[in-house]
Length: 298
Image 1 (tube, one colour):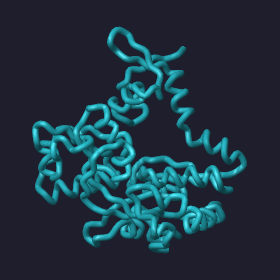
Image 2 (cartoon, rainbow, N blue to C red):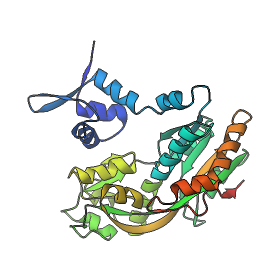
Image 3 (spheres, rainbow, N blue to C red):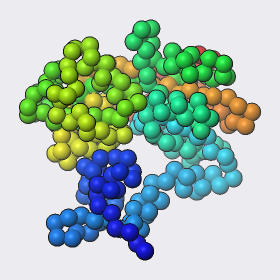
Image 4 (tube, rainbow, N blue to C red):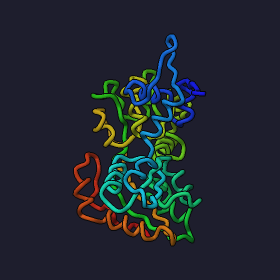
């Protein structure tokens, strides 16, 4: 039997907000039908959507005889681009899953992936990513590979009509916020800034409204569901939104070496350090890739 879902049920299944589900329907990426004034989604349409966006499907198309490099962690536009380049143009295959920095590290620790994509700041040491490696993998063979530097900041509607420049602006009654999921590097930044400035999260309208990617969070602004989120500058550029920088961060990859993935990870590292890859991504707005592929710790 073809089950019928509500948008709320689809949101729970996909671990996104219901606002994003409505946006997918609006963009005709997810087919739905109306019962009165209520939207409903057939199970078969949900499966079609998942199939179209399946990284496993892409792996089978581009690399039917290759074992994929499993990459878990934080979402990033540059990283998406690199995965596409590798999957199309090289003898490698990357299967990404964007689950957040901390969850990526946990997945790597549990040997559920080969690489974690992270941007986690250690407040005590004033350093990105290397301290988390020492905490999670003190006895494992791991390498921290630099990917890019990028800006995090306030993403607002075009022209920043509500003049949101400070963290305390999130307390205003006319401001609705979009948060990121616990365990993400962006959520870590948000919570640390609120703590440093003695701002209670309970007073922020939308603090409990979370999304799992920069795209999904910014899309709530596009659909008039919110006024501001915290995210990376490239997303604002792509969607035509305004951006006010807060901090510059290092976005890195943690390679965990095993006998079974050594050859594939070595080949991927060569790709990351190649001039051809740097030339392919150097014009992406909002990124500093001058040190892409640099070994930060091994």
